Image 1: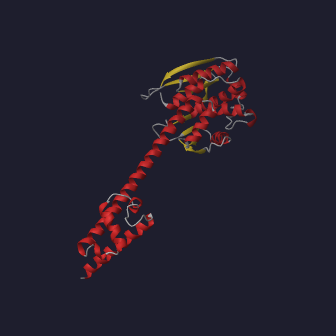
Image 2: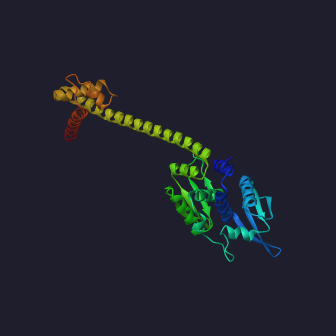
Image 3: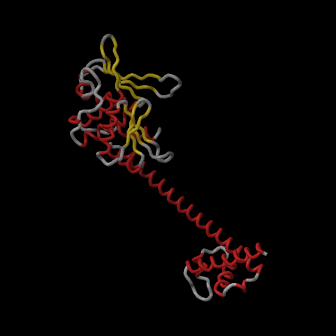
Length: 313
């Protein structure tokens, strides 16, 4: 089972207060419902690939309305493995659609009237229904952080984004496959959203994975930084030793000023230590890291001058 399926399975097991559950049903039907004409009468079909969601829709409809409905399972065509689950409402569908402000008698309403989402619990329930109907979330362990909710209507999509951003989630919208999506990219915001819609166990799992993943990334960055520093020290040391040996082979280290000769001899003896460690090894007294670096630069300049004289000669 995918992580997104685990989240949805948890959401379908939640017990919700009657008033708030209606907000969830409103989102589920608005986003997954369709009207067809059969025997000169409209039939409402609400379809999903998730059996737990179809059972929840069926139960919520029975809870709120006296109607004739059935649950149908169909095999998807073109070699697709998932079944298609359809909750079919044969009678009373107009009452349902008008009561949930999805259909006003003449057309589909793209946006939910604000007076139907009066309080925080109803907003959370609507977002839960929207995620069940058109949502997905990446497994934080195997991919980048991403949660989205797909909606067919632009105005409805805008409304979902505004509802999410009431809680500081930094949701954004974009076009997608003849529809629109509201999405989150930040791991912390995705965890907040999962908690917001009631997926507590899924949120805790997400946070555990996110913390471990971020910790591994931090350790990797530190290791990479340490390796880079070691490479930098090794390269600098190699260049310094090359210059010192060049001086030794051409004119001898005696030609260096005493302080520079002292550093040159110490560097030849301790080839792999850092500048800070090298500064602590000076026999005449400990000097600063910048002081040892200055002397090594002077040795490099001395070697470069010798090379220039060789070229001129």
